[in-house]
Length: 251
Ligand code: MF3
Ligand code: CO
Image (cartoon, rainbow, N blue to C red; front, side, top):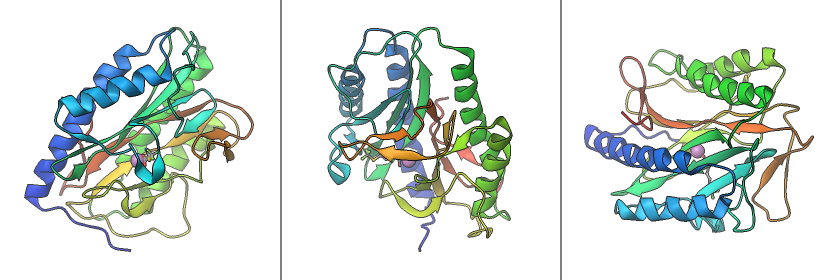
């Protein structure tokens, strides 16, 4: 395993890549309402990414056929946009996307309500987001990678939710997925030491029911085994000498 440390020049490019995808997400989140299709979101996402002169990094990644992963309700991640799949009031929809700016990748995800949603679905979305923030409280030099994993687990588990184990966060830079892998649940060891210049995508995926997931026959869509709702929240962050910088939060 080798974890890259980004130079100041690379960090500038990572910041810009992440700023641009967060601008795209601001637009996509506004689009979400009953009646639009998951394909509408993907099409607009790809258009916005290319309009900024960037490349959608998910498109054709291991054969994935779209620019934005759109996952509805019990779909955890990697839902394939479909022009026949209309969102309806009460759904929750997870959007996951990234882009390449001058060779540097960004990656982020949000779960968004479609119109008015049930209070238990709202709570799942809020806890998943807070899990990310609990995790990155540990994201500083002197701490170790799996301190992040443990903080997420310690926060989420008391709610009785299932933490997805089959998919993890990751390093990011000149490739979408770099070392290290970042689990969202407790590990037996503390993992590598965190160092300034590491850029990491931290992405809790949380199920209302059990943690188990299954893959659909399309070989992409991951769904909860028990059919319960699932939420996702991801940012690309930079480890600094002090507090981490969240690169995909639009200022
Ligand atoms: N969003 C995934 C991640 O956060 C990567 C998706 S790859 C794709 O790491 F092929 F599904 F697009
Ligand atoms: Co990611």
